[in-house]
Length: 285
Image (tube, rainbow, N blue to C red; front, side, top):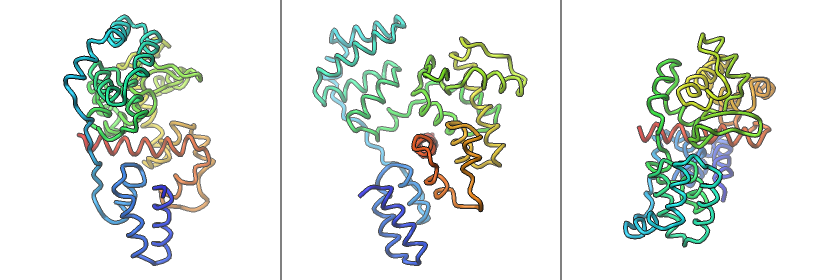
């Protein structure tokens, strides 16, 4: 019953010449919103449209939550740049709410511009299809500038930002990747030198005006390196170009086959999700 299995059953049936079976498998996948649904639609020549399902709205409950002491404290801690304390207050408050109240709390966090926690809380509730709420574009000026500079579509830049940092400008990973597009300082400095951009400091990589153009320039270089092949460029962004080179097939294969054979589970999922996010951002635009 997995979408992944159904899609590949359809691909196998198509390869064997059983078009009716292939169409049946694809038809079962298309109503779901994910990488495989988009692929299934493409195999049948259909334009894929995500299924927008807005979160339920309860204005009275929303107002009550906004004025409840735990969430007032959470908001004030965010405004004081006390992220760890805000996260703790939020988690404690959320655990005490009913699922219906948690749904309204997702809307509240989104309204605060606290996209990381809004998206995480929605995922915890199994709510993924309110794309207007869960796919915000809070850095439009920076993304559009980077898109103009690199020729990349804004949807791809936003897809990387959403997957890498969930919009958190001060994100820092255990591997020392920084900012919205999670750049290693060494990668950022090499990219800046090659592009004739100012040498970034660790602190400046936490600024969207610095991080987004550098991350986009780095991604543009990967795309050029792989002759415009998005799956290879996106895989390289996650696992490094040397890993992507090792995964090249001995002879050309279709993109979906290549992605499915990426041996790193994390990178395979990353490539699929970035493609999916990009499709959603394009659809919203």
